[in-house]
Image (tube, rainbow, N blue to C red; front, side):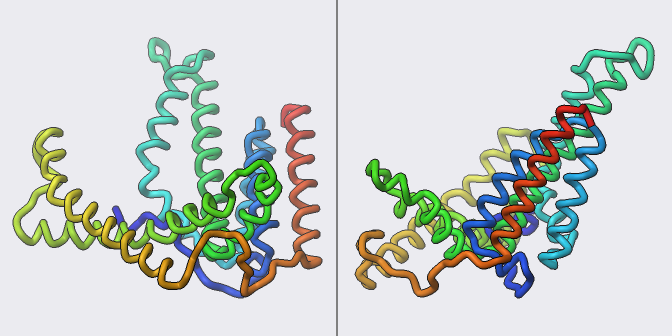
Length: 265
């Protein structure tokens, strides 16, 4: 299950989506999320699904990579579906049962919304390197520096967190495999027993995480890192024609979803 978590991973490529400026991709994700929450009827959900599928095709991201990343979210998706199915009023599907047709429709729509939301955000990290993502976010939040907001420090922390998620997941998997080889059992027994069995994993994992953090701090200090003041970038971000076209299409997509919501589509 741990190997299925793909959050923070970057899949290098030379597609049109990979070549987009990270600032435009961040804005497009915001527009995508806003458009997704405007979806009300089946036509709008089909439209968002089609746009998401088109982005996956353009970025050459395989569906199995998306589905692999969705596996850890199965419990939340199923729980959300059941809550909407049994706690939404309306016409009962089976007399005497608390399942309604309106609840069934709402649960399917909520599942689609969660799946599309996760897929859209995954496409951002899959097609953008952590460094480019950090630079783009720092430039977008640049105006906040005027009110003394530590934008550079915030973005560099986010970049480090995204970068070390796959590393910590791999480290956890190695520790679990080593403990299983020594006879540890993490899947049977009562909840309290299974929680206690996690201690041999958490302790070495925390030790490893702090060791990596200390090594990273030493490496940054040895390279004379003193924050974002006066720093320059190896690659200067510039908007190209494809970025303006993509942003225009994103705004049109959001406008279309608002119109669909107004007419109940």
